[in-house]
Amino acid sequence: MVHEMRDITIIGGGPTGLFGLFYAGMRGASAQIVDALPDPGGQLTALYPEKLIFDVGGFPRVLAKDLVKSLAEQAAQFKGPFHGNQRVIGLEEAHGHFELITDTDRFPTRAIVIAGGIGAFAPRKLPQPCAAPWEGKGIAYQVGDPAVYTGKHVVIIGGGDSAFDWADQLSARAASITLVHRSDRFRAHAATVSAVQAAAASGKTAIHTFHELADVIATDGVMTGVELKEIKAKTTRQVKADHVLAMLGFVSDIGVLGGWGLSIANDEIAVNSEMHTGRAGIWAAGDITAYSGKLKLIATGFAEACTAVNQAVHWIYPAKKVNPGHSSNLAIFGQKDD
Ligand SMILES: Cc1cc2nc3c(=O)[nH]c(=O)nc-3n(C[C@H](O)[C@H](O)[C@H](O)COP(=O)(O)OP(=O)(O)OC[C@H]3O[C@@H](n4cnc5c(N)ncnc54)[C@H](O)[C@@H]3O)c2cc1C
Image 1 (tube, protein in one colour):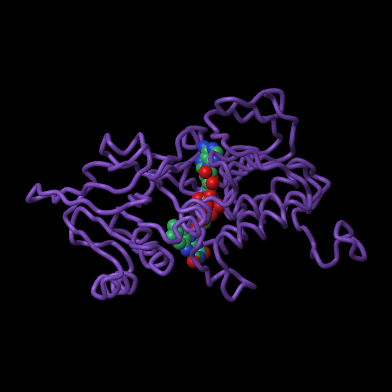
Image 2 (image 1 turned 90 degrees about the horizontal axis):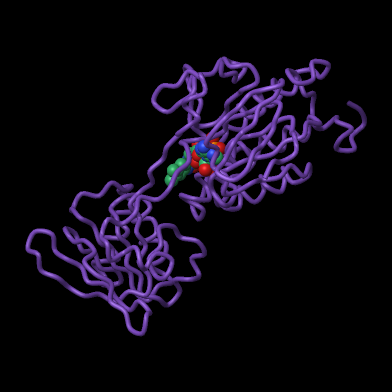
């Protein structure tokens, strides 16, 4: 499918891209987001939807998923579409405009803002062959709605922040939590490790170090447990499991974004103070950018999106100033003048 021409296409619908979509609309530019993931929010949706964030201006504390909802609502005022499940794999430039190419679609656009974060990312899968048939039928790599785990036996595999955060957060609602890790070295925040270890000491949670998944146990096609193997002794044990959460981290890949004649190092795109990449018509913002003093934070991404979009708008329509003016004074919001 070939989509209609837009002024600005933003690659990536994380917090940076969503704020950029809003900003483009505020400047009167037609815009859209193209993202490899099905839903908006980038890392916030995929990696930590239930975590509280404390360092976004105006929110003393906000759940990551609620921040995404607010950003999407703010952007929706201007009706720029979010195209999910569209991983950009190519770029063509002809007749004075670009076309971004995905597996199925083409997105003609006058300018591009790359807000690709750490790249298109996917969960690291369990290596055991027994796991694949149960993916989506008991084995999951992300937590969606925590309510699903209420009263259930949950086995969590992993030794990092996600594994420990969810072991801690789900313990109040689950029937049992069993944390399984291949070693006794954990990469999670010390306070969370202590909380989970305290739950284990009181019998609410079980921790099995030097263990890995050996098999899935099922009755009538429904998962009821898993068999765990002790890596050194090769002994096995069975534990109840309605759900297995494999929290093994993510693999990310900036893929083609690195091959468009941009200056890339360590999967980051070098930009100047205008967020320009050096290639006419292409700006970048958010975690994917590199410059001296760069901070990879949501707040930084917001400011960079604002700069990139305003520069792009001026480049497409030279009569429009780079400086957007104050939103509190814009006619587009029904305020007194432009
Ligand atoms: C556990 C955790 C906790 C954090 N806590 C905080 C915090 O408290 N405060 C804070 O400020 N920051 C925090 N961060 C960092 C913050 O999440 C990032 O700075 C922020 O997500 C960057 O936003 P972004 O939009 O630039 O990139 P991302 O959120 O990474 O979004 C990039 C998007 O681009 C898409 N994409 C990439 N390549 C392609 C492609 N080829 N085609 C299509 N789409 C593509 C991806 O699918 C993704 O949706 C935390 C990060 C983690 C992992």
